[in-house]
Amino acid sequence: MTDRRLHAAIVDAVLVGVSLLDVWVHVDDDEPLRLAFSVGASLSLLLRRRLPLLTFLLTLPAILLSDAIFAGLAALYTLGSLSRHRFLLGLCAAAYTICDMSSWPSPELDLSDTSTLITLGYTGATAAAAVFLGQLVQTRSDLSLRLTEISEARDHERMLTDQTVLAKERAQLAREMHDVVSHQVSLIAVRAGALQVGSRDTEVKEAAATIRGLSVQTLEELRHMVGVLRASGGRPTELTPQPSLADLQQLIDGSGIEAELRTDLPNGLSPAVQRAIYRTVQEALTNVRKHAPGAAATVSIRHEGGTVRTTVVNTAPTRPGLPLPSAQYGLIGLHQRAALLGGSVTSGPTADGGYALHLELPAEGRA
Image (cartoon, helix red, strand yellow):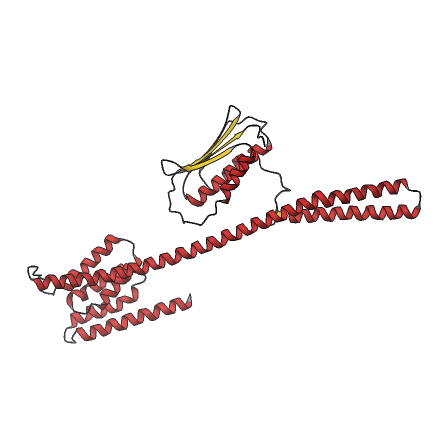
């Protein structure tokens, strides 16, 4: 930040110096009024970053009274690089052209003279060039900022993808350890206990007791290791209670979106169907928050003729969203989950500029 401020101060000092040199070349010492306005216009460039419009207005008298126009061009360029009002920039360019073409105190313009029209064209082109150059610098800065944001978003998504793959590998390893190793160790503990009770040999009983104790200790350590492997991001994944329809309202309230829940589902739906509905609503609300800032959503869940229909519809976004890269893994997962339960997922834009996601599942959730 200090280097940037130092660079800005050096640039401002150079502009003021060049502007004063322009005044020294084009304004005579025996013209105090023109000299005062020209010097004031040069010094006003020190305010160009904080008050660009005021700086440009302060340079107009110098342009009108003298041929020292560098300060006006610098102020016009700065205004073009900082302002996004195209109409204002057009008015300022026109004001510069008129002031530069006028000769005070006799500002008449003979537009019937060809040379006057040519000079007017060159002067207008000069003013437009300063504005366009400022707009070009502004666009380059905006593009650089957007590219930085997109790069950060891509890195973040890549990190999340890597974490997801790692979590799946951990969960798979945890299942294998739990299903194979714990079963075998449990059998060893049971057999050791039976041997301890049924044997009359003291040494055999002591050995069986030792084997049983080690087996129990191994099972405890194995359970702890499985819990660590099943943890993703520091939170247990498969060991925590799975969400159900009773958690939908809490999910919607904590989504940060203006959303409404409409449901008439009966009790007794299978846990798999409830989890599928919950994950579908969760993914839809995440996509609304990510791709449709400011949009409102409606979550509708109905039970009709043995089929559960879930619809999440959002309105058109009210704020521009940053185009972020996406691998569509969320929707792919929803399609796979619905297919395993004998259902389907469809999605697409709506006529009013929003988006809709539909989930249909059989109420019994057949595999």
